[in-house]
Amino acid sequence: MTTRRNFFKGSAAVLAAVAATSVSKVALAALPEPVLQTKPDTMPPLIPKTGRDYNPVVTLNGWTLPWRMNRGVKEFHLVAEPVVREMAPGFKAHLWGYNGQSPGPTIEVVEGDRVRIFVTNKLPEHTSVHWHGQRLPNGMDGVSGLTQPSIQPGKTFVYEFEARRPGTFMYHPHADEMTQMAMGMMGFWITHPKEKHPLIEEVDRDFVFLLNAYDIDPGSYTPKIMTMLDFNLWSWNSRIFPGIDSLNVRLNDKVRIRIGNLTMTNHPMHLHGHEFVVTGTDGGPIPHSARWPEVTTDIAVGQMRQIEFLANEEGDWAFHCHKSHHTMNAMGHNVPTLIGVPHQEVAKKITQLIPDYMVMGERGMADMGEMQMPLPDNTIPMMTGKGPFGGVEMGGMFSVLKVRREQKPGDYKNPSWFKHPKGTVAFEYTGALQQPQRSSTNSGEAMPRAQTNTPDVEVKVRKPSGHSGH
Image (cartoon, rainbow, N blue to C red; front, top):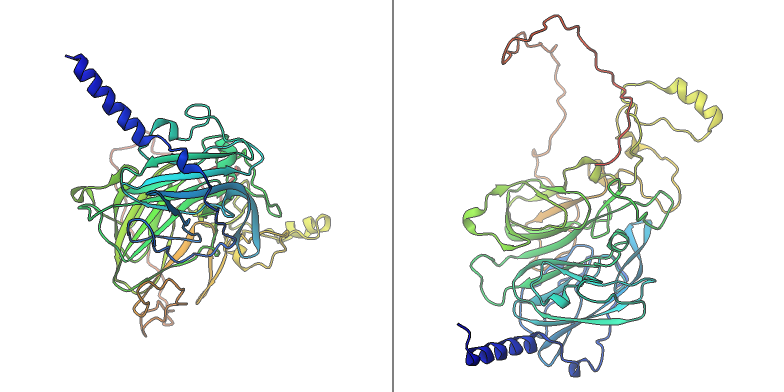
């Protein structure tokens, strides 16, 4: 039963809770100076010099936003603005992002921190920032029109809340998001545990990156924002292979990789040479009893995953999305398969009309990696990247985990190519080849077919329909 006394006690508690979560306007006298970044390089981890201590992360081809402490509050300043992002050497895109880059800088805090984020809008339209996955007061959730008015161009809004639970989070607009996320507006947020956590182990290397995608025509600079699924650039932190930095670790390091997916499809992320366990999701750390070894984990739209493993195998190990179209760069999708179709005669006739026409795809798409095909300015080849043994024939969502015995603790520099011990590289067999013998064993059937005289059907190599979507 609610009594008058209990009512006032409850009201006082509510008021105290509201006061604890409300923003002190006295403390907002001056904005923290915004820090900008102009390079797409992987920056060293930002060691905390103020506030509570933690083990920082490394943002692949990105950086962590510095902060200032103001009366016990950790203050950041994000600037939403148009940016030029180098997605790979020789290819730049005109995107929207934060503080000079897309994605924006990673924000790192500690569980229990009170956090204040100033957001200045320098875009040509209104925006907001949603703190994806956070427990916070409803009015700080960043959904324009629903929980707050939009941040108009030239205006600065303040978000303030307590980082209540440790984990891996993201931030992105919840205003005209189809446009703004297609233009690259997003960033990562890490909340470190305030003390030793039974489900969060300490690691030697802690990498983070976002999966994002763009549709930019060859020769163009600006993404097409109306694309729903048929993107042609699949990227990590708005970088595409060979522009994505390698993940460089020391032999026997315990490694954590945090991945967020802000594309419009899922991505099965596959690591070579090691087994990992998924230790965290959007909801927080996973109980030990629910973890199992994997070499591929699927990350759905809007999800975050933490994977962890012991880097105990030296070498250069591929790490990529296992959707094969996502490991290519800009390509035309509505192209028929021409494998096995000799078209030199056709090509001769076409070149009479189109002198620059080139025959492609007769032997497979690897031709694309070999051709010196003229491309429009500001266009990255579809499959590129040169390894120690030749063309890697990859693009998009692809990088390399480099495990080295001699890598120093805290050193993230690229150690160059792995030097394989003698006798440990696949090699050509040069002996005599025998004629293959076909198996004479008839395959079984689960049950007799009703019609047994069906004529054989030869599958046509060239399919009549194209491909669109993924």
